[in-house]
Image (cartoon, one colour):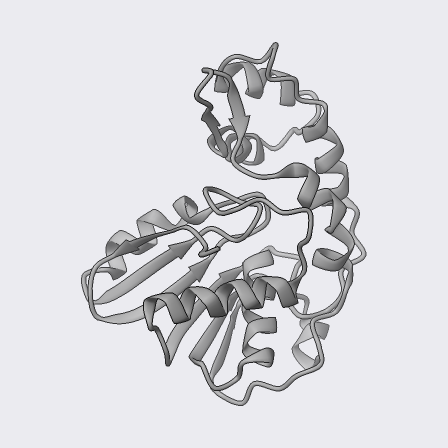
Length: 217
């Protein structure tokens, strides 16, 4: 199956990969700006957005998904941009298929194994959401407010919803598939390969996902 994407503009291709729980729509503002000179592909990684759902999910499988997408659209020597989980997917793909990306840009993530249980706690909160009771995004925000204090994170999850054909609200990700494979996505180091072309790591000023000591990994 081919990953779902939205494609903007024409020209040299840029492939963009979102973070955990997100989807390609998170990068629409970027795509609209850069599509004036480039062809920007906003992909939904498996178990996210409109791409297929699966109980299996690791970075080798995601790499194969990306390879199928590239073959389908006949894209080679492209620029890859990945944020968070998407950045780790790009790193693994560039190790597995080092001749395909022309250069890669990794946003606010490193190849190291992360020990934080933050997202695991988030998953438990999301599992408690009952869309039989929660009818609107406002209802969802009110439910999440005592559990997630950060308003930007609550807003992110509210935006990661859609209405099914029966009218019920639902998340735009397959929570079971993410939870089942959480360890391999977060707690395992990205390794076993070498990519020798240009790489740019971007770090948020106050981010703790890339620390000064990580510069020497």
